[in-house]
Image (cartoon, rainbow, N blue to C red):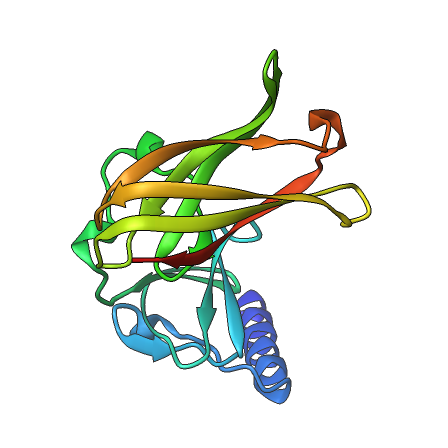
Length: 188
């Protein structure tokens, strides 16, 4: 009887302390119900105290499916375009926005007998077919100072198509390049 009373006192104290700190206790009756993210940004983790895998914005609707201590396992319900989904994880490539619905990926630099080259791919996700699209490649040193800019003209690039490019760097050694960006300039 003493153990039960002690356990009851401890449980009530924990509940009172949690409520006193402004935190709501998600009780077992909240499982499988929808709740909302209270914080401006809530970190979504693989496991309790595990690696952060995403962030949920304030007022995001979540469903609690399990609890472990101070943690709730949640699912998020929403809609996403089918073209944004894949069952092949290896097909996901880090692409960067170039502007006007264009992206770029797989950019590399190499020295060759004919000069220093920049190679990569541009993806047209603009919803528009282009007869010609012009881009500017800017390369930077370790102090984030512009080393050189080079034009990348790409002809006949319909919407939904990825095209490879090669351009030359006339005044920059490949070893000087620390970062780069590609920006859409114009097209028709």
